[in-house]
Image (cartoon, rainbow, N blue to C red):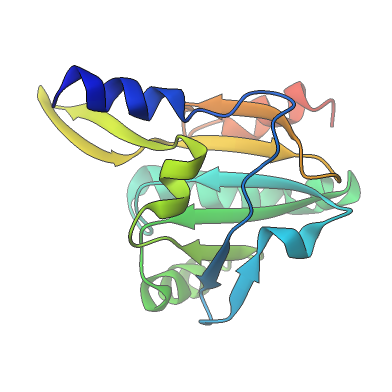
Amino acid sequence: MSVLVLLLMSENKLEVGQSAPDFTLLNQDESEISLSGFKGQKVILYFYPAAATPGCTTQACDFRDNLNSLKSAGYAVLGISPDKPVKLKKFQEKESLNFELLSDPENEIQKLYGTYGLKSMYGKEYLGTIRSTIVIDENGQVTLPLYNVKAKGHVAMLRGKLDI
C-alpha cells in the first residue's frame, strides 16, 4: 500500500462541526434509506465490518439492548456494513435487532466517512471497514466522530460521551 493512498484515506476522517455527507443505501428490507430523511433528528451511525461475526454481533446487540435510552435522548441508530441486504435481514432477525441496518457493498459511504482503510490482523495488512461511530446532530453536523472503537462496551462508552 502506498503512502499516498494511506494519506488520502486518513484525510477523509470527519471532524466535529463538519456536515455529514448525505447518502442513500438499501436497508435489510431492500428499501432506500437516506441520511437526509433524518433531518431534525440526532443520528448515531455505526460502521461495522461484517454481520453475524462475534464482535459485530456483540456491538449490534449492545445497541439493541440500549436502543430505548438512545431513542428517549432523541437518537436514531443506523448500522452500516459492506454486507448485502439479504445477509443483513438474516442478522436482524436472528439477533432481534430493532434498528435499520444499511448495505454499503462498494464501501462508498465508508470511504466518505473515513471508516474504510488499512487494517491489520495476525500481522497481515488489508483494506476493510474500520469499526467507527459518527454522531450527527439535528442539523446534519458531526458532533462526535469516533474511529477504531471497540465492540465490547461501546454503547456504554458512547452514552458516557453523550451524557445519556
